[in-house]
Length: 449
Ligand code: HEM
Image 1 (cartoon, helix red, strand yellow):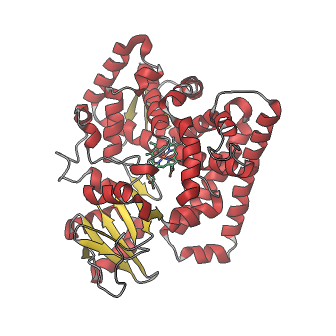
Image 2: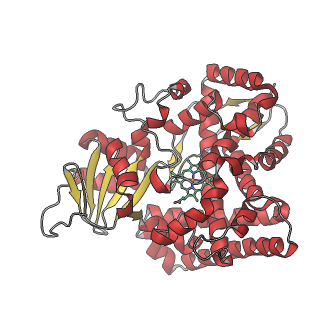
Image 3: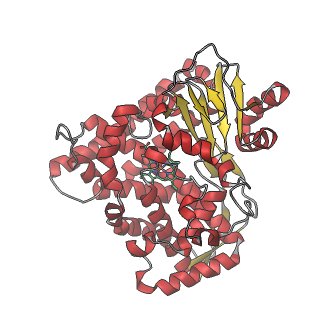
């Protein structure tokens, strides 16, 4: 790699400064999407901002080539930002999401096979059982907040696909409670970095770390139970217990295994629940889409809930993709430069924070025709894989749960629309961009067909 003279000027993209910068820093805490979108309108697809408070350089991008450079071509020069590796890591430990470098690669190689399409296909029946059970509680004409409903369902599905029946309902509830509390404190720290000093002084950080230890103890209990029973359940826990490092042929330590499980919980439920809410909202606003979906469900006949049908390209998967284009739960992906770097005419020093603005990429008129309209059919295109589209990230750190999530969401959508319909009371979605983008609610009425 080229070494730059530290004293030389870096050629940053257009800088956002003065009053616009102040406005961005303050307004950005509450409504980052609006501020970042406006800044891109003012400064173009790449811009630079210097935060004097913490002396950090930020580059924001909604440029496809720049994004591909950071996530793929020169990914070795980029770690997850401190927000994920340190701020989140202190609660969750060292799992795939928070890990970096050689350690991360070793773990990723070990875990990846468990998330292949073939392995995920084995999980359909566990998922179906959870979904059927959740739908059984539906009353005719019931008022419902689908966001809350999907949050619980996605959490239970992760719990059961990871642990099968070894985890009890109370343990699931307790884990859910702790994880929600940890996420809330973490979200506060991320939004208001100076606030973490206050949280620390109040002892809230320590308390939250203690709570996350409790969640690890619950996972350890389940692990001990499985190991001592000697039973094989063919779930993700079995896979993690049995798998061995290539070089040493040793299995993962219990401590690492528990960290990985906890990370899978966190990464696996919230994003999926958010995406499902956006999907159901878009279907509710587009009756012709609902009709076409119901026709596909009928046409698939007995195959409709099989893993092959769920995983192939279909109108169902087009709906999921288009809703995640418009409302990407991962609205930004952040990285920190290990060394000075350059791309095209731009250059920047080590430690620069790169914010790849996924929402901006997904709605950039340079790449998308009619970018703000919901048109699932656009994903029929045979070149769809080359679209400017990153809901699951890209490069070596692409979401490990992509097939899991796509299959789970297709199954939930098809199970639901085979029997029910959803009349939304909302014609607009109020969205909140914390670590992930989520709707504040999705209220409406269930209709039994
Ligand atoms: C719609 C649902 C989901 C969305 C939108 C989503 C999105 C993402 C994105 C964008 C990343 C990359 C972050 C980055 O590069 O900084 C990621 C990573 C990850 N996701 Fe997902 N995800 C979803 C579901 C899941 C599920 C169901 C699981 C597990 C059961 C999961 C586990 C993970 C893990 C472990 C990572 C870290 C991978 C690594 O760095 O090696 N995700 N996800």
